[in-house]
Structure formats: C-alpha cells, structure tokens
Image 1 (cartoon, rainbow, N blue to C red):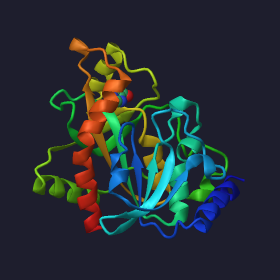
Image 2: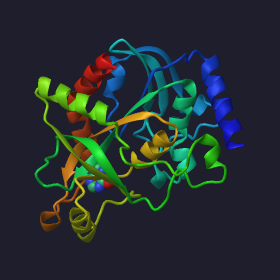
Image 3: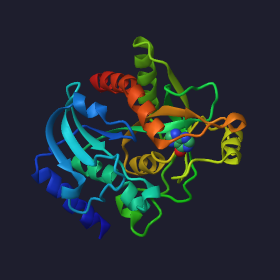
Image 4: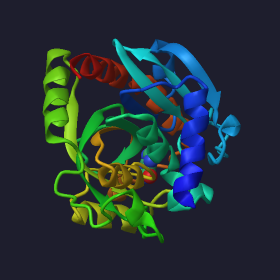
Length: 271
Ligand code: HPA
C-alpha cells in the first residue's frame, strides 16, 4: 500500500514535468534563499501533490522546486516535515522517498542547529560526519519497510566520505570556515534543558537539532549518497544558558545561509 501511494506521488510529479532530477536538496528552518539561485522550471506546492504530507509550520513555505543550479538538475524541498509537527516517520521521510523515485542519486540536506561544542559559534557551519538518533524511533520500523530496501542498513558512513572530503576542500578554497562533527537529533519542539545540554556534551555531540537524522537513515536504505550541513544558530552552554527564541534562530539561519549556498553551488559543479 505504501509503495502504491508513493508511486502515485511519483507518477503525478513526472507527469507534471519533473524529469530526471540528479540531486535532491532539503532546506532547513530559515534556509530558503537558495531557491533564488535556482533557474526554476517547476514549482509545486506540497498541497498540490497527491499523498504528500502538508507543511503545517507557517515559516515553511512548503513547495517542491525543480530546476537548474550550477548546471545540474536539482529538486529542492523548501520546507521539510518534522516529527514534532505530529507527522509519523513515514511522513517525515516521504519527500526523500519521492525524490528517490524521481531519480535523484545524491541528497544534500541542511538544518538549523544549536552548538553543543562550545568552540563552535553561532553563524558557523558544520558538516555532519556522524549522528546520534535521539528521536526514539526509526523511519525503517514499519510493516513492509523491507520492500524499499534492506532495513538492517549499515550506518558505518551515513554521510558520504567522498562528498565530505570535496566539501571540505571547497570550504577551504572559498575561505569559509566549516567545522565537522556529530549531530544529535531530538524530537523537540521545546529546546533542551541545561541537564539535556550537559548530557549532549557528555555524549560528545557537536550540534543538536530536530531533523535530518530520519531523512538520512531513509536515504541510506535506498542507496542515496548523502551530505548534510548544519547552520549553527545558537550556543548551548549549560553553564550560561541564554533564552533563545525561534525568531532569532530563523534570523541567524538566514544571515548565515549565503555561506552554505556558496558551498552547495560549488559542490554541485563538481558532481
Ligand atoms: N536545540 C537547540 N538549539 C537549536 C536547536 C535545537 O534543537 N535547533 C536550532 N537551534
């Protein structure tokens, strides 16, 4: 049933001109400016796509954008689905399976995250080298998940080593500071307590957010090459915790996004 549902979605998008995208891009909270760089061929609101979950959080524009960026055919999810919005993990990762069904082979993911590693500052970027799934569930834990691929998928390198090496070289060439570290995904939507930040420090996490991990697990099941970047929007020091507000997080994400756009555009040229 899920396979058929997904097929309907893919067929609809194919018949609406989304034709062999090469690379999928997921834009995180506050990160929508990349769309302005895409030579857009098609723009489809999530609400128009059969079986697609519908974005509920108002700061997500919620659309699929197809076009060209750095000479590559890209499919961009502007607005993603979070577990904290009440979607289940199948829904949270539906866009990834859809983009795969349409033909992407590479997935670039972005997110806004809090810095747990206190040598990282807000406004910095971090390349994900590994992750901790602290969402208490798996996007591969449903009946029939094995129809989509191996559910016992190996997580030795959820983020592609070669893509990460290229991205680090690109950052260097462009004088953009790019940390590399471990991202922990929590459910949210509340931010963490001081005790939780301390726990994350003990777990040697570098950044914390509320997304990405379910999408990356799914992408690994279906064999996509993945890369993910966190835009660090706040510093999570349990000894000196400052109140954060989601508007600030969005503002910092927007201010930092141009650096991320440069990295993504340069990487696309090399793919
Ligand atoms: N936790 C803390 N700070 C954050 C988060 C989070 O999940 N996302 C963005 N900044």
